[in-house]
Length: 296
Image (cartoon, rainbow, N blue to C red; front, side, top):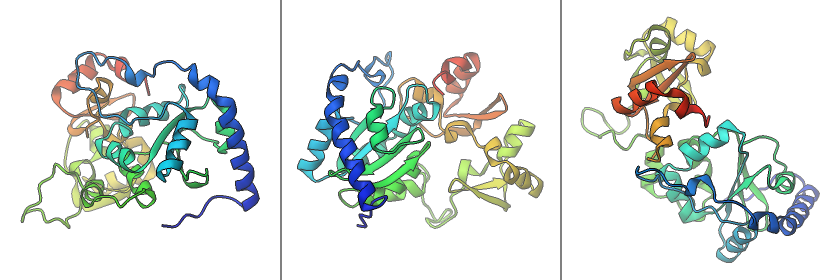
């Protein structure tokens, strides 16, 4: 495993010193913390799988040192929409939970409560997710929202042990899709089940695209109805990209595992595409959309 760290030896040394000082000064503030939202009652819905974030920086560092595991540190802020998306969608994905629990020591930093740690790690954007050695050398820094697949791909080579073959395959293809003679294992995996995102947004029509008109975006292969549709997408891909990377926000808000949305259950609202896992959740969103988006 390549353990190259960021910055010169002097910069790394200064960063470690700041972090050690921050560790000492942050203990009281952490001890006085409130119960996190993740621990609240889910109102009868099945609770989503969750990461056991360590309650203090000192405990996380001590545990990583004792067990010889890298830390995964998530730097967030309560006012940061993408941070809340990662908490609701990425960090409740069972693949991410299994990977983190088995191979890392997790700690989450609230930027407003612990600015000294944010400064010590040189964080300039939220959210920032880092893989850090027990002696506080940064192995990997990831800025901005990370989907479950992106996070697993970035972390797999830095884990304490080899990632299982099953986990690697789940990153590359939807485990719910059967492999058969009609769909061989090496077939192209199409994003959003091959439906044309431009048709959904601009025509309010759910239509499958053609293998003749393809584009790559965010690591996915997307199909389009025509080359005109494809060119519109390429001109502004984020305009057509579904909110929350296509995951069902209703499932997430209600405490269930954040599942992949079905393009056949799409809703277009405020100039964006919103996907839902089933008709019932789609209808709940249509009735009270603000209830489900106030955390974004």
